[in-house]
Image (cartoon, rainbow, N blue to C red; front, side, top):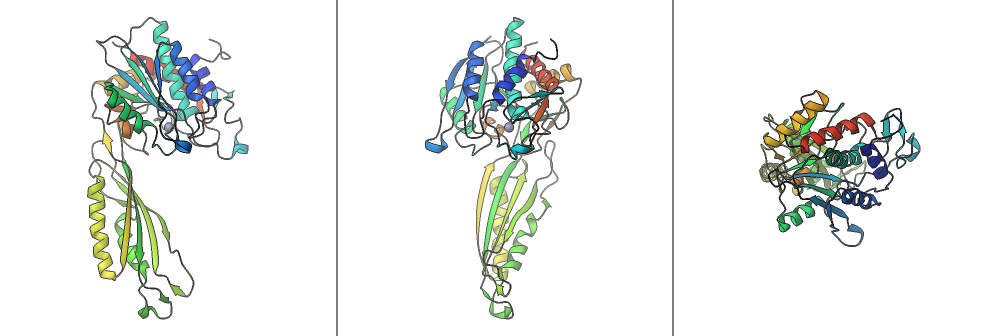
Length: 386
Ligand SMILES: [Zn+2]
């Protein structure tokens, strides 16, 4: 292959980038993928969920294979985040331009490149006449958006259909700087608290006639102010808590306001649950409120629970595939933000491995062509029974 002939993986990724699938739009990306998978013998089920503006298109593809081999699933998303400052892109975000050994475009790393590599991996095995087990793809158009009518609903549908893969590989970009560094075998949970404190309004010169809610709010937020909540464990870093918003809605220079508001987010590991955290903090808030003589309201939003996939047959197999192609020993890590793996872990064991994530969500998102081709080889080696 000469340098001007892109591999099938690169070509498919370029064609996917050309589909303007800014979340929640399908943009033709799932149609394109459906065509590519049908050519490889996959049976496709399109799974639109939601109504009106919240309607999201999703795709499930399956190809039955050798029953003696495990059923391996691949999960990903074709939706992408908005382009941001379009004028700042050196190549059009939906052009799929190749320049100096790199492919540019929104979704190149996160994660149309991962999808292109996986489809190319299956095609390469077919061309080499390698017999595979059952392979399926769980592809959503709702990962970067609300994540309500995407993977979470597909997982419910798969369970109802009795489809249970033995293992699911998620193609999110997991490598910080180069291929072969990191497999994500779990993710932290995320809990947001919105705390509103009500005191008594008054003139700032007559504080004895008022009850300022701000000191109470600060005392209530003390345990979540840049705090480490534990020492971490085998797979997870310590849980962390950060204040993300502080405001006084009716602030004025000569007034003690009657309301103050604070918001915080906790990224927590498997040492905690939503219930233990909210229970502990609610008790603390009540104690402080009583001491300061104020009222409070707390609203909790938990959009991810922590999970971990213990190392085993499939993580070993993935590590071996990565080592065979890159020469590197990928470490297992549960750091970073949330992903749809938080839903897929209710279906089967799940781990994530994909491209280098350095430019994801940024202007000039790009990946090295060599990385897409290495990822194709890694996925092929993973799918191939020894
Ligand atoms: Zn992604």
